[in-house]
Each structure stands twice: as structure tokens, then as C-alpha cells.
Amino acid sequence: MNELELILTDTFRCSRADLYLNSPSILLKDKDWKRLDRIFKNRSREVPLQYILGYTEFMGLRFKVRRGVLIPRPETEILVEAAIEKIQERKNRKQKTRILDIGTGSGCIAISLAKFLQDIDTDIVAIDISVQAIKLAGENAKLHKVEDKVSFLEADIFSLIKDKMKKNDSVLESKFDIIACNPPYVSTSEIGIFDKDTLSEPRLALDGGSDGLGFYRNINRDIGKLIKKDGFLIMEIGYNQINQIQKIFSCGWIIEEVRKDYQGIERICIIRQRANG
Image 1 (spheres, rainbow, N blue to C red):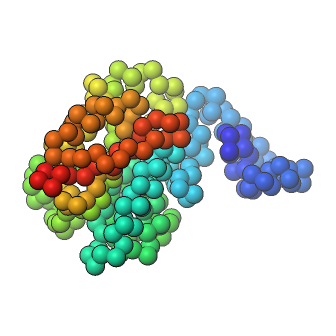
Image 2 (image 1 turned 45 degrees about the vertical axis):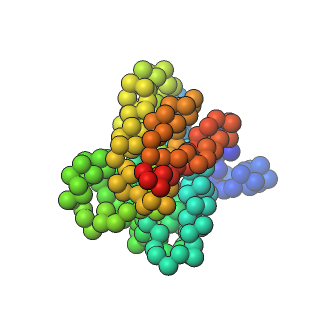
Image 3 (image 1 turned 180 degrees about the vertical axis):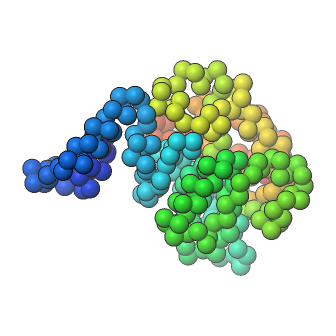
């Protein structure tokens, strides 16, 4: 749906089909007119529509969103789909499948996995450095009734690894089969040229350092300590970053597959450790 359709279906509390088929019979109350006025005024100030409405759609599910937490993108659905495929390949294994979502934000990755893998025995851990993100992700987990399937942890993953996982041992006590991550991958210099919509989102979730690759270097350095030898690291990457990513992960890792997004841009990397990595 386009923005106007989203606004009107939300206001009328109807489907897109009903919007066109039954609009003459839909009456707006005074409170609806006031709400529409508020929405359009906020949009004129370039506040993201998702923040105005308070939700967005991801993997066919509705997620709460608010300022201070990154808005889920359609491209990240490709990451979730890839993770589901890899997890389903392990379906007949006797052991529980352990999944780690780094930088969970709204919880869209971890919660979607919990919802779509209910027939598989999983242990899902979602971590984020932002207390706002962890709070919102917890709300979304309750909204989708998977709060007993996902453990949320407010922490810096690299600090935990550096401390040899002395903290939160019960959560990070064993290695993971799948590690999913949508890291900040925009270079600092590029942040300033974004539209105001994107600039409304938390810089922490966007800024990947001077070349946009800082988080990937940290992952390459440290994350191998958390992943099983036959496990997979599935990451989202930025536009035209694949060559640099291949160089960063050239030692100890194998990039098994790169998937393109809906615009034909190389967007998702599926990586595993080498046998002697």
C-alpha cells in the first residue's frame, strides 16, 4: 500500500479492498478528522509515517515502532527467510536449535523466527545495546505471544565476548546454530545526506563508522567464539559493500551465498566458518 492508503485504512480501520469498495459508506467522526489532521501535519514535518501510526508491517505481522528504535525494512525479511531455510534444514536434529539476533531493535527478526518456527524446538536470544529497543521488543513479543520463546538481553555483544561471557552465562552458555544480524552499515559521511525521515531514526542503528564496515570487522573478530562449527552467520549488508565484506571475511569464513533485495542489490550474506576456522 502507498502512504495515503496506509493512513486511510488505519483511520477507517478497514482493509485496502474495503477502502475502495465501501468508501462511500464509511463515515468519519470528529476524532477521526482530528487524527487525520495530526497525521498529515506530522508528515509535513517529515516524521516517518511508521512513527506517527505507531506500527509497521514485517513478514505479514504488525510490529509496534516508536522513536529511538529503527523501523523494520522489507529487505530484512529476506534475512529472516534465509534464516528460516537454514533452520528448517536442521529440523530433524535432536538438539534444540539456538539462534542469536544481534541488534534486535523492534525484535522483528527474533519474533518472526519464533512465530514461523513454532514446530521446531528453538532457543532464541535477542540482544541490543539500547534499553529502548529491548523494551519495545519485549512489547512486540507479548503482542505476538512469543515472550516465552525469546530471551531479550540489553547489552553490548562485543563487551560480553571481551569479558569472556562472565555476565549472563545462562544466556550465552553454549554456542549458536544461527546468528542473524542487521548491523549499522551506513558510513558516517553518508548519514548527513539522508532524507529527514531516515534522520529521525536512531543514529546508533545506522552509523557503521567511517566506511560503514566497523560492525562487520568486530563481528569477524569476535563472533566466531559464539557460533557452532556447522552454524551460519546471516547478515544484511549495504549497497556496494559485497567486495569489502568478502575481504573482511576472507580468513576463517566462507561466504556461501549472497541474496539480492527487491531492487536487485546484493543485500544478504550467508556465511559459515571454515572447518579449521
